[in-house]
Amino acid sequence: GAHLVESGGGSAQAGGSLRLSCTASEFTFADSDVGWYRQGPGNECELVSMINRDYTTYSTDSVKGRFAVSRDNAKATLYLQMNSLKPEDTAVYYCAADYGLGGNWGVKGACSDARLGKYLDEWGQGTQVTVSS
Image (cartoon, rainbow, N blue to C red):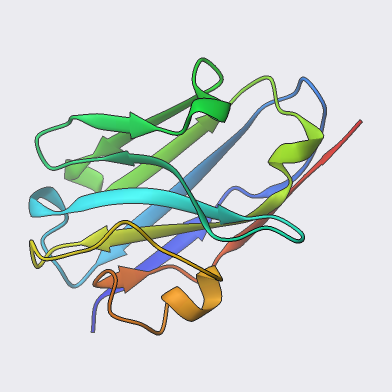
């Protein structure tokens, strides 16, 4: 079946950078809307950034100017370049995809529950990002 596999998480100092990658298989990545969610300690699942199949993008206000979402359809890979990291960026980051054109990006509650629900077609397993001050 379809898969999304994240990589690139880890630890960084405040002000540092990390790049997350998410590689897709078994579905037509180029025809999909894809994006990144995160869930930090005590927080709900939050849509961080997404990039549609037509390359339009969205980012939540707290990461604008610091994070950049991009995609390489030839490699079926989604990226999140995270610069000027802050301790409040500490979270588990998940990539997600909507290839059925009927997805709901308005996730509520925990990302782990959303992964099991009907919001979107596919989720990655999550990768931890920890930013220390």
